[in-house]
Length: 360
Image (cartoon, rainbow, N blue to C red):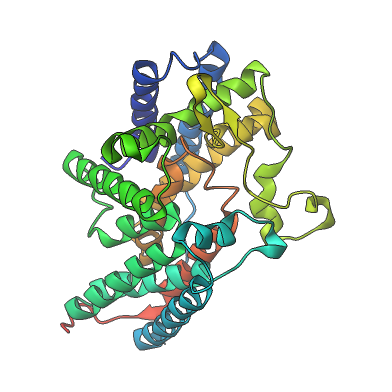
């Protein structure tokens, strides 16, 4: 099965059933929540149908750039990012403090190791080395990609590394979905062990703390969004446009200084600052905006997942995360800068001349 909208629907069915089994006693879900979800998924199906009726195809690009050029650039930016992470990390007492300097500060105070450039390039090098069947080189790029994910301290890049490292992930079946989910859970646990970041006291048991942390990350956004719908809390206005501001720094976006949302308390002391991706979309743009976003996602993903061009095959691995992590936060509008970086590299991949079947 390779239908993004159907897979998205199935995922949200599982999520809502899980929420009612494990967390509905904290915050019950209202009819309006389901109507918003139906609005999103219904418009995704509409966008899918529009893509089938009015498809857009990329033109053929000349293969004029030797693959060696990309390998060299990817190697240089890989070393630069790892060295930058080493230099920056040396000034902090813990991995968590290092992470805070990269994410939990205002834009003008935030550190950078250029992971947004190096990760897409190294992922492209891995993608192309697999096409050439350069086994040793593929292992090198895979290891480099995993190192970048670790030094980024970001679960987004850790999860992306999984999608790029697993071979032929575009050929979706139940066995592969189960394998990916298992690996993601292991990566999730690894990241929280490294950061020593838990939703309950690990002194009572590390495994129990990891399970509760996983439960909060997976399902608490649903309850937090319901609190917004109930009027018990509010979100900063137009923070969904944070990604637009990163690309187009106009004065109208001057009040959007961070992509972090405020914490809210669910019942029984659960704390979260994620509201799913749908929460901010609804808060900022209403029913109509959620529908437009859904139609856009359905249209774009249908074209992307049905194409066999290198552009699409490379971008597919990245596209998995934004689509299936809407239960957590918005990796579309809020991460628009990351989308642009991967799309630019995907176009570069289209110009690369590779020799299939080379062994090294």
